[in-house]
Image 1 (tube, rainbow, N blue to C red):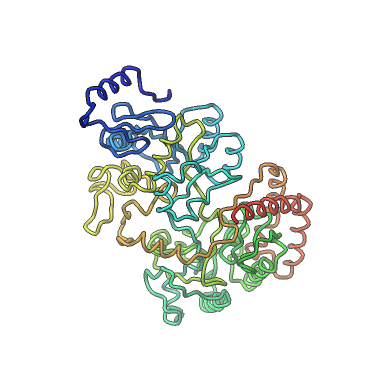
Image 2: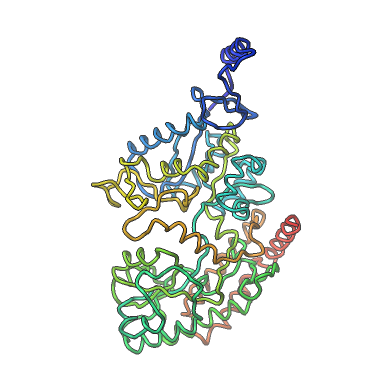
Length: 534
């Protein structure tokens, strides 16, 4: 793309119009950098754009689900039918496959390719910033567009995507707090009297502050094992699920953390694997495993919860729970389920990476970052744009139901639709789009999710992003050391008699891999960041 500038002919025409209109209203409007859609000129420090000569913007995103090419092209046309007259922006959609996302963006940034707005996964932020590939959006935050983003996300979340003083991206507006517990088979709960004892109800999954200590879960597992000896009380598999039991602010990679469970206000970077919080969790799991409550092949199994629940040989599994969770779980598991919240605290913890997961940012390749920022802002403030990108064209790709929710048009469903992104959790303001209603969600679903977020307490390091660029070798070595012991410790299969010994071996390996150097550097960066917040 070449920079958009007003041609000499257009300049001459404007001068003639101004001269001819002296002393009267000429009908032309100079909007500066505003976008009021009245046919006026949108000016930035780099260029001037009109409906006839709009800024050409390349919008890249990950397309997690296959779309019909012709349908996507029609949606792009519909987006431009809105964006060109209202914003003087012509949008080119650039969908990427997740498997190729990182490498494609990296090549585009290094090659100087046309690219304006892009998704930034938090683990890629440091390298893309250091290579000069990301545009710092801080300068735009005092504009009307910046204020619109703050209004959508809130002050804390709007500024969470920062590193080394660079505002690199905005998180999606979605549920972020991971309040966890158990998803359990309803028939077994009914049979054992658990339903009545704990007030379990069909479709009751919204958190109201009621939660149980994990010792209650152990009592439930014992009852299940006694009544159904052929059934595994708790299915766990080879995936790190320790977060369901204890919350640490992982400070990105988990090597040097804040022990939030021990002290919500602490900013001291500690070795997670030496804390009493960690030991308590893995000891409990080992005890459960020895008692036969946990799936015996948990350390190596990769089947996943849906397969095990459908097979009928497991009672429960660990999961994050939120409003609408049970409907989705029941569809996946093939049967009725109940949800129970468990934990140590009434509230959940929010760290930088809970919120700043995928982020919406601007490429340094953008020919006019100010215009790119206007588009970014629209993803958070303009419901029509968000619906077009996510759901397509009304009455062609989706229909609006009587209650104000949306669903596929007649003849289409989740298996044969032409266009339906279903990725509002990924970029932009999900709460600005229609609630997608497959029969399991009500029109107030976004309000319920926002209420779910309100149960969170921010970590004192919220907004801090550890830059591990200079310690990439150590971090890789640390990950390898952890992986040697993680599955056994985090599924309980290490056995109660081997917990202390295995934790010691893990910590010896971590320190040998450079943990102390990483922790020291992380503490230094955190202290500097904290000082800048005062």
